[in-house]
Image 1 (tube, rainbow, N blue to C red):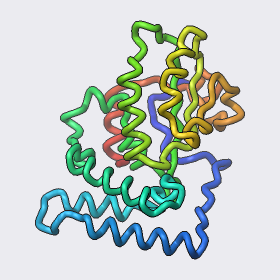
Image 2: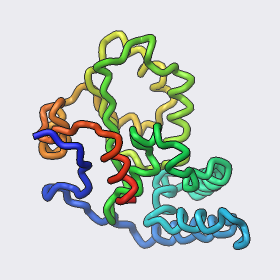
Image 3: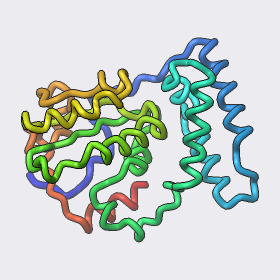
Length: 228
């Protein structure tokens, strides 16, 4: 049965395992957190509460330590760069009415807001069924997107799935491959059996699942704003 309602809760087969750290790792995370606090905006800055909210997000500093392979200097460099980027872009303050048309297709920042407690990564599914060499983003654009995802949304990618990828477009991924972190590259799957990766009740019907979703902007917009 077709539906325009969004899936809000994870399936019963989805188990969110708490992330475990060693005592040494916990101490490193604490050091990084103290470093990040030393960089924070003054309390009277209008963006300070939003920066504090981001830093208080569960396992924020843990993600940066993992992304930096537990090398403190690298983790500090990464989190400092992201704090500067967020101050410039201020993704938290983008108003719904300012990006209503774009928001109808969803955005990374909002996907994170939807995560249940304990969940810190997500799956991105890219369907190339209607894509051609002419409509495919340029390698330059792809590199910019990759830079934002890898540098400022560290450890957020659980899996990147690409389906219906024609042979002619494989060169595109070969072109951006050198810019991918080895860990990120390992998370990518091309034309896989989706039922082995996504619960059938959460997989869209067009890909062989039971979730027969039909996009309807008004319903999508209403439910998105009510949830987040």
